[in-house]
Length: 118
Image 1 (tube, rainbow, N blue to C red):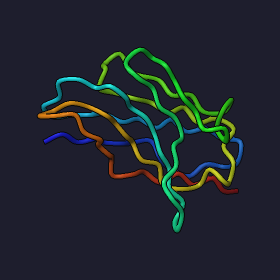
Image 2 (image 1 turned 45 degrees about the horizontal axis):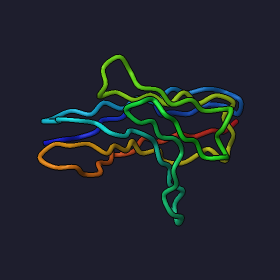
Image 3 (image 1 turned 30 degrees about the vertical axis):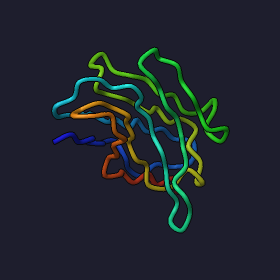
């Protein structure tokens, strides 16, 4: 059973920082892409950042210069360092991975709440 487990969400003031982490576990052969999406209630889930096995990164325009995605020394781990947080960053963040277990498939974490408020 492959699963993605997230941690690090919480409540911070505007301008503050949070560091999200996600660990993929299970019978995994290869991880091709890991990343983060977010979803405001009533709206579509949107890409925040991704990183592939060659450490190529991709960021949404709204977070460029503020968020940094990275892979851990353990290749099944991904982090999202979020700095200069804004109230509009408030939403649920989901870990995402394209990986191979029995076959190549998209996987999603359970989501972690990030709230930016004074």
